[in-house]
Length: 161
Image 1 (tube, helix red, strand yellow):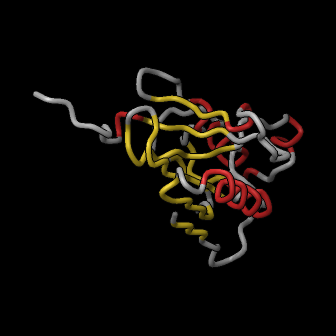
Image 2: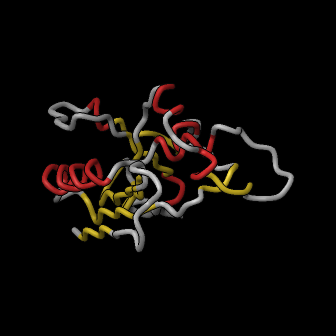
């Protein structure tokens, strides 16, 4: 398993600045499934605690309509440096034989307006969530979910015809 933890070139403007992804060797009949990890919950007090004018930038596209709190939620779904390190160690220890890689990197600030938080993406035929905190013997002090899209990955066994 490859572990790639990138550090920011300069200190991030907030503690919630790190995103993580993993690739699962075999998952629901697909291989090397990319899963984007995030914190699923946050409080209104946490939402009010940040200086959003400093953290958020211009819209992705001029004139586009967007949820004004969407980009805020993207930040709130991110991990702190300490959470990142604990999560990487947990994944490395618990899922070593099942993962192809773990990648952790800092987000780029300012966050553009118009981003959708991972938790807002609806589940469907190929898109779903892994709720790590609901798996037996989960030991982390914070909840972690992962978003995947099976349509983006090759089947393990190619069908005939």
